[in-house]
Length: 231
Image (cartoon, rainbow, N blue to C red; front, side, top):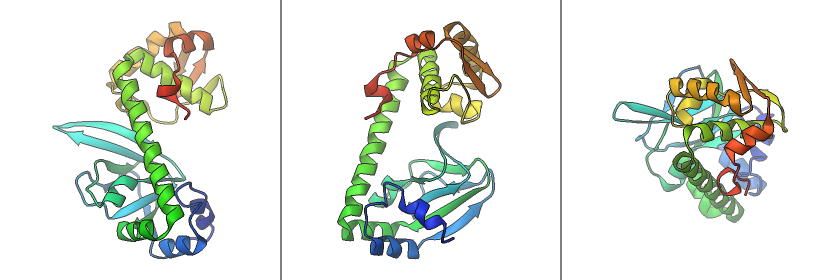
């Protein structure tokens, strides 16, 4: 592990409040690994042997059932996955694969669980992280179940504009095929929906999104704090 990577990891909410001694002990048993693009790093159903920290590149979390597949999330630096399985010593509920060359820190799950019992502040951070993940899943389920496809796409595009500082134009952070899967749609349905949204203040050119009428887009998306956040 590179010395310059440690401060980036330390700044994560999961690790920032634990004692320095605990942090150094936990990271001493961890190691870095570089993965090529398109590699399936973990598979759903396998034992959760490591907490993964994404330092470079990007990772898709996905799930499969009965020949079907869906994107659950796309992670970028600096972030972790999958905390719940490692703390519970349970099988992974999702698989993960790299979307580009990716550098990962692997933290042994057994050491993570031992530190959870030893360092009180770390335990509190773990609980807060899991609570935040739970609330994110609930929000995602509410959006999927309560909004139609146009509303889901409009809400996502408006949210990305907000994350970009209210930008009227930005680049989609993920490929359209991943976005379609994440929003519970086929790529064909997403393409049709994007064309329909041209009457609601959105124009999409390749990966470029242009908000032509924010009021119309907002009226369709109907942002809701209990679905879209923030807490």
